[in-house]
Length: 210
Image 1 (cartoon, rainbow, N blue to C red):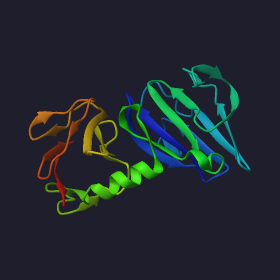
Image 2: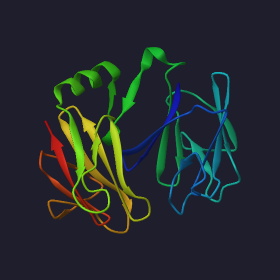
Image 3: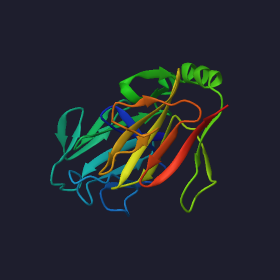
């Protein structure tokens, strides 16, 4: 199934499976893929599926839509194409068309094969983020995906990425920097260790790993 992998500064922030004939992308909250950034128009672009083919069309956006560095109006996407909107890069992956080349993009622009990623996951014990303050105190979010985003868009958002050596957390966007054990977080990312305390948008959380 085709999917879009959204990243900024080399950090993957979300993966979106393309399941509908028409998938909208833009800054407004009613879009299927929401990118909360002023460089992105309210209704920026649309992805249209026709059988196994996926077409990207720019909706007369202010800053334009680029595929592999070239401005486009409407273009069919091929597996591995990179869509650029503002500072965001969106990689198009089509497993059905490229079954021989199943890849997972992880933070830092590195690519590992599905088999290598599965092997890495085996070596990592189960991990989760436990909320310890606020209205959601006691809630636990299992880190089962390659990338898990946490926080409030527009305030503070961080992404936790599973890598072969462990879990890494990095700031994605926001006006207030998240902290890990009291230290401000940057977009470069830092390794997480069992018991680390995160504070994000006024909520305290703890990273736990078995």
